[in-house]
Length: 553
Image (cartoon, rainbow, N blue to C red; front, side):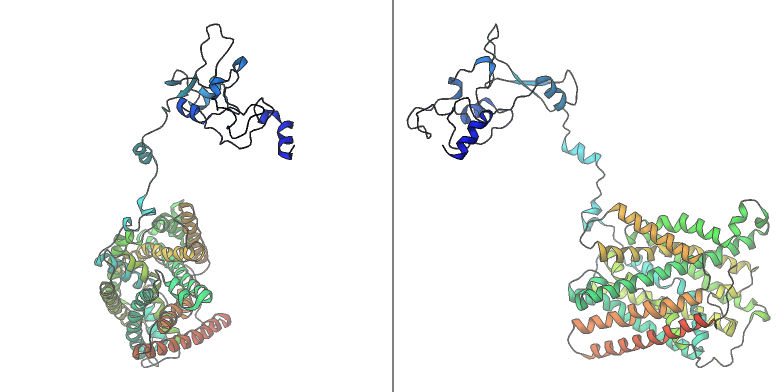
């Protein structure tokens, strides 16, 4: 006897009651088979002495084999208790609709009336229609269809890009002119605007050449893992530095406005917090900027960006008109810095910080209803041109008024009791509240592309990233109020890398040699030089404490 036959004899429950095993394994029958299927598939084991393939004896159905005591006619069939089955399959409900099937496989031989037992199945009354199920689920087509994401027109895209440029950096342009000199600063402002306009469009061109859909993916395509680390770090640092700067500006502007408009507010219980710098920062950043940063799509901030542009217009008009009312003791000297000054590299960092929106460029391009190179080029030209005019007006008005006393935030040079300036401070603070979410978009996008590139949208991860970014930027801004150092440091490092180094490098790698590639090489050399010298000078000034001390109000 073979080993398999011995095992079958040791476990008679696995086979039929006959001692002779069946040579071929039969497929396991389905639970609750229909009568026809049960008859077609059930076979009886071969009797002793017959051939296993059935040639020695005519094959008979299991119905022809009498089974005493109500045993199943077919072996190895699964039996259920009717009451337990009814309760488990019908949600423990009683009195529901049931369907009866003929009991082909079960028969009680000892019943007095000789009736067969009946299998009972629920009618599956708890199943809902597919339309009802889908309607009850939280289905968001934006999570699955890219075309379902909201899109913006040319005007909305222009507002988003212009707001990204005319942000916190515009308030530091008089400080840049003071560092570089009047003539040199003006030339730098115009020249860097032209370069930035070209490199913004270069990012989209590089994306098309490489077949990628993000700035990070383009640099990774060109330089591998090291390129991905470099671009991710530069993008994240620049956007996060912008968030810190915006929080500082909120603390520098709105408490002064509240104190000037309501002088008795500082003496009131609990309401005195509205004049406290740290309390106002925590309240407004978490109450306004944080909810806006939870939006998933940048196109939804177009209205907020429109308000930001209006507020910046108010600030520029205020600086121009109120410059004539500044008392003589607040004015500084212009001698010695009309042509060129020793802080030219720090000035490049401040200007770069103001004009760099390269981290937003592909987001804005993707938000266009009809994303094409020509349409994006028009958006870029309009945005950089308007931003250049605004920055020039702000820089010349502020520097010609305050001279060598110009601060990193030129609004802090004005007296606290000037009503028009306080209104401008209020608008500027509100502008920063609506601009901060744009930078949070970029930080979150960088983190998702680096760690979760091929994973779908996750609302929990989205919430965790947004919350940690806003809270950490707010915490750092509570520790300092020197806006000029923030502009210089982040402008010299991440801004130079984003605007003058990485886009031309990728273009050189992706395109054939031409006059534009030589121009790109010159821009890369310029960016590397500015980065190295600016970092050395800025960190040296911070370490030695040679800069002007800034007191947090």
